[in-house]
Image (cartoon, rainbow, N blue to C red; front, top):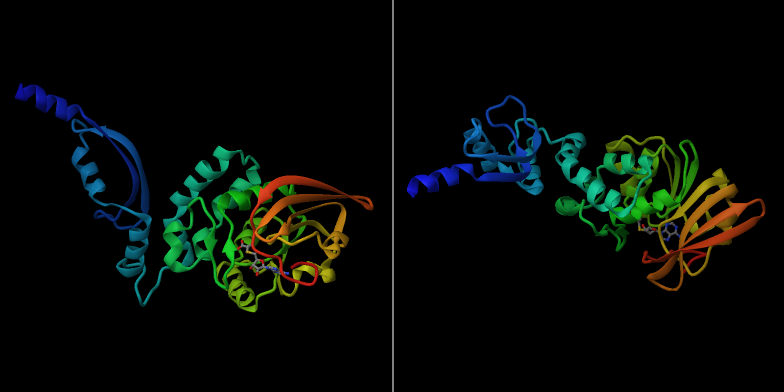
Length: 297
Ligand code: SAH
């Protein structure tokens, strides 16, 4: 009886899935993804047990990298790229479970979403939640949209590499970075000085996107200086579509803009410019922060 029990026990297979910190006596540190089934009969069982003991959450991992890693200490902090790697697994999972599973199929969008380190666009305290299926607060009472919304907007923009895109509402800079990773020439306008300044430094000095054009102004008036634009994407909702933005579209241009007579309850409108005419398509209800300005609220 007891013999049987121990045989049974040794045949139990364990499924482990998670992140492990992998110094484990190895000369380099890296994060490994564990997704394996194993049983006590496996020759490397004890080694795997050892790995399981090291299974930790991304937040803990971040903490260790910053606080005790020989590669990142107070005197020698982790570089953005090293930090980004820590979240590579969360990012891949976000793409698979939140985007592909819900029908995002534009390869260029998926690739860009997998590349941009979303956590760097929010406050450090929110890093562990950066890849969750929800919008997140940024400074100045604004929000960074849920990953799915960002991806959907990018897909609905039907953009091709090399196109000029005008974004109204730079905010954290996350959507701008995704558009840039999609191979677009990005012009982005923000009306709040603090956001403009912080985001500009993040996008350029920290992330190296020196080819993005960022402006501090009222985006409801567009950005006449560099018009026309192949694509316009508005990240805040206004009462109507600003005429200035329509006028800055190229022929065959496309604009995405949340529009609603009531604040915080809009329809996402896709505007097609064909010659001198505009066709509007309603893509459904949505919620964005207010578009504030001469041709907004
Ligand atoms: N794309 C951003 C979303 C930020 S929320 C991101 O990925 O983080 C929307 C932003 O639009 C806010 O930062 C808000 O300040 C900005 N905004 C609102 N009205 C604006 C206007 N008239 N011109 C420029 N930016 C505006």
